[in-house]
Image (tube, rainbow, N blue to C red):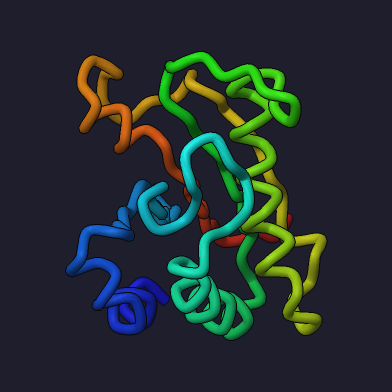
Length: 148
């Protein structure tokens, strides 16, 4: 599955828009804000649609996995009419990805969940504009379902 994702997403990976990581038995697809969302917004940009379509096809080929979609932000406070804070923004971003993927009616929705972590799970310190950009992301954690 990881090899198939690497092959299908090679263009996005080469551009640095998406990274794939393995952590124990999990595969993590990290989608950066640059292609996925405008600043302070939760609506998916057109730039991310081809990658999400590829990911959806591959997820459909591996029905024995659980998928957790996590939204993350930087630590710059947000307060708008739509988003009270970074918690809400990160959660709405995760839900946007979830709803897009679940448009594919063949996918079993019970395998999916969404979570928003706000600014509280950065991959790097929020001490420069470049680092803050890296922390604004959505991650898809793919893990095998362990039978009892």
